[in-house]
Image 1: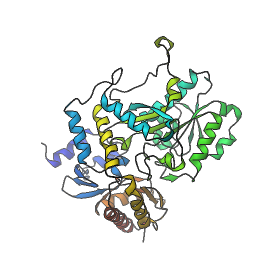
Image 2: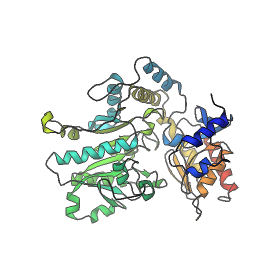
Image 3: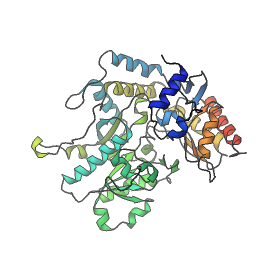
Image 4: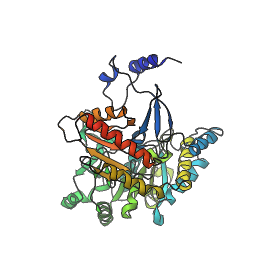
Length: 420
């Protein structure tokens, strides 16, 4: 095995990290943080230093690292088969997982599960399904999507075209789907009759927008949007890639307002944060709109090589088992209250369940990154969104660990004069 300095040199010589300014990363004086182990909410680096995982490893980890139930499920599946194609074949883990997922939504409206491998492709699937549905079911003029200002729905070309943050669209912003971007629910009423008649679906991150800086939607907004879509006979696509699997205090954010959408997009926490797997859940109405003889061309021609991976499905089934066995959701109210109480006086504080954020009021847009870097010295790992700093720990976090996370954040803020 290469030595630690040799590994660092190889990283700087060969790797290109996402969302990372690479010039300072590759500078000779920079020592990258190399994470080598994890247990529960704690991660350990190449020098043996330990950190609390304050952003759940980019909002993915649910039950902590190296959870014995999920580990055992993956190992057991490895003893059978790791992966086979899901294109024209099937397997037990995917069948069982689909059944469990659709049963999590009340009322029986959601009946079908389409597996892919990440949040962007879950969104791509929903959008393609919506557009193709109308095209081949008598409403081909419905070729337009509605998304919201400051939205983020992923980085693939179609998902990025829905986004309302130019920074995440790359060098050009004129690509992808036909999209109307609106700032609020009220703006939908300002659309002309012609515009409304062309809408195939409305896409939203329910309750809270993540990459927008943890921007909260007004209470009741989602319920009203659901009613508007029903009145217009427009599909509602919910992007719960971030908010799904307990992050908001319920299994899904839409439960807070009693909404069951036409499409529910899930990824990140689906496998407990272990393996790439995503799913687009939808209705029998949508599914039946694609039925026909092969020569009719109604098939949904979209998919990925690792769609429905056995290992991913095994991990996801184990994660759902942990939710039941450890009564994860029932334990969240006390943690949510504790997190809010400890952070309430921080500048620009807001909270949605186990998602907490604060914003530093400064023209120096690098200050958030500096604070997060300083927090490492106090045993906390998290990443900023500009000058917004997020705490979104794994749901297994204890109240004592929450206290340590907030204390580390305060120490880092004070070090940079961002809080006194």
